[in-house]
Image (cartoon, rainbow, N blue to C red; front, side, top):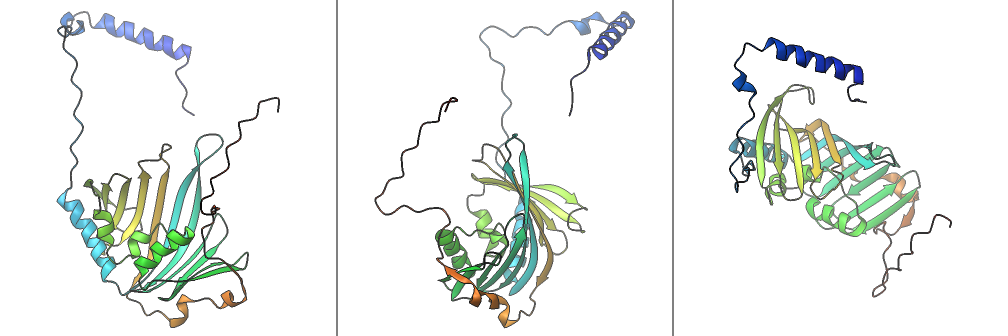
Length: 292
C-alpha cells in the first residue's frame, strides 16, 4: 500500500525548501513573483479533446489479420480468457477459462472449455448444435442454421451461449470491427506477447475500447484486452490466443461427442428464468430494517 509522507519527512522537506530559498538569494527574485491574474470576465480555456482518428496503419493491420483468418478453411487454437468480477471488498477478482477451439468453414465448430467453473462442450455440425455439461451429465440439442455466423447468433439468442473469440471465427472478422468504428491507432511493437514480435493496435466504437497484439510476421492475433464503455466499474477482459494451426485436416468425428448419447437431455434454452407471456415480474420487497 502507498502511504502519505510522515510528519518527520514533512519537516525535513520544509527545512530543505528553506535552505534552497536562502541559497537562491542571489538569483533574480522576479522568478518567484506570482503570475498576473487573468482579466475579469475571462475564463481559462480548456484543453481540446483529441479528434477521433482512424490511422491508416492501424486499419491496415486490422484488415491483414482479418484477411488471414477469413482465408483459412480450417483452424485450431487455444483461447485463455481472463475476466474481472467485483468482489465484496471493492477491487475486482479475476477468473479464467481455457477453450480449445476447432473450426471448419463454413459450418462446423467445436469448443471444449475448462476453467474456474464447471467445464462445458459445444458442438456444431451444420445441422444441429449441442451444449454438453460433462460434470452434470446433461446435454441440450437444437436444430441449427447452415453457417457458423448464424449458429453463433442462434446459440446466444436461444441459450445465452457466448464465446469471446467469436470475432475471430466469423466469416468476415473485419466487418465486425468496422461496424461503428470510431477510433483506431497504432501503438508500437511488443516482443513479449506470444513469444514473437507483435504490432499493438487500439480501436474503439461506442460500446468497447480494445487493444490487440497482432503477429508482425503471420498477422495472427495473440492477445486482446477490452473495457466496455457502459460498465461503471470499468472491468477489464483479456484473451490470449495461442497454438494457431490453419488449414489443417480435421477428422470427421471432431464435431460430435460419443458421451452425449448417455447424457440426460434438457431444453436448449436460456439459463435465466423466463416469464409466461403477459405475466409481469413480482414487485420488489422493501429492504428489511436492521432490527429485522
